[in-house]
Amino acid sequence: MHERDRRKRAVAAAAAVGVDALVVTHGPDVRYLCGFTGSSGAVALAGTRGVLFTDGRYTTQARSEVAEAGGGVRVAIDKRPPAVRAVEWLAKVGVARCGFDGGQTTVVSLEAMRKAAKAGGAGRGWLVPTDSLVAELRQVKDGDEIGRMQRAAALGCRLFEGVLGELKARVPEAEVAARLEFAARMAGAEGMSFETIVTGGQRTALPHGRAGGTKLPKRGFVTLDFGVLLEGYCSDMTRTVHLGKASDRERDVYHSVLEAQVAAVAAVGPGVRCGDVDEAARSVLRRAKLAKAFSHSTGHGVGLEIHEGPRVAAGQEQVLEPGMVITIEPGVYLAGEFGIRIEDMVLVTAEGAEVLTAASCKALMQL
Ligand code: ZN
Ligand code: ZN
Image (tube, rainbow, N blue to C red; front, top):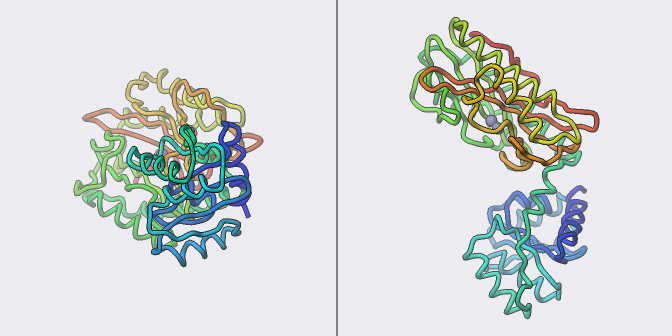
C-alpha cells in the first residue's frame, strides 16, 4: 500500500531537517499517511512506528480506514485532544526531537502540546516547528493518486458538458450551480471541492463571484469554475462560454486568454520553474495589453486539497517534477465589462505534461 511508503518518506523528510519524530495534525496530511478521514486525528510517527490518535466517535471508522490503507498504524482512542496524546506518546517512547507543522498549529494547541511534552519527560526545545513536510511530499502524486485525480477531472468534464444545456438567458446563476452540484452527487462525487462559481454578464469580471440570484444575460459571457471531490481528491476547472453573439472585443480578449492558457500549458514540464510557466501566460497577455487585468497567479497545485503546492506564480523558483498536478488558469477581468478565465488541471509527466481536463471544448463557445 502507498500509505506505508508515504510514512517512510515523511520520516526521512523529518530526519533531513534534524528531527526523529513527527506529530501530524492537518486532516489531509493525516489521511495521506494512514487513510483516516475523520475530522479529529493526529498521527505520531517515529522510525517505523506510527500511531493514529482520535476520539470515540471514530473508533470503527478509524480502524477500518487504516486497515483499508494497508494497516501498519495502531489506532488509539482517547478523550483528550489527539495532538496532545500524540506528543505524550512520542515523549514517552524517548525520541530526541519531535517536529510539528508550524503552519497548521494554533497557539493554543502548541501550548497544550508543550505541556504534554514536559509531562512526558521531554526537555526544552524538544518540540521543533518544521515546514509543512507532509504537504511538501503531497505535491508529487503517486500512481494511486494520479488515477483518482484523472477520474475526478474526467467527472468534472462530463458535468460541464451536462450543464451546458442549462446555460440560458434569465436562468439564475444559483440554479446552474445547484444543477451542477446535484449532478455531481448523483454521479458519485462526495461533494464539491470548493464553492461553485457561476457568474454571468458583468459579474464575470469578479474572479471569485458567488453564484447568486442574478440571472444569466441574454448576451454576454458566463463563467463556471467548479470542482468535485471524488475518492478524496479534488478536481478544478473553469470554462467561460458566451450567450448570444459575441462582439469583436469579446472575441479578441477571449482569444488572448486562450492563447495565454495554451502557452502556459505548453510550458509545463519536468525541470521547469513555476515562475517560467506563469511568465508564459503573462507575456501573452502583456503583448495584448491585458497584463494589468490578469490580477492573480497562473495556477496552483491540487490534490487532497483544492489549493496546495506548488504555487505557479510570478518569480516562483520551485521546479516542476513528474507527478505534480497543477492548474493553469489565466484570466482577464475588466470591471464594468466582463471577465474571462480558462482553467485546466495538468499532470507533469516524465516527458512533459498531460491535460487532465481536456475533454471539454475550450474554443469560444457561443450558446
Ligand atoms: Zn478553479
Ligand atoms: Zn484553480
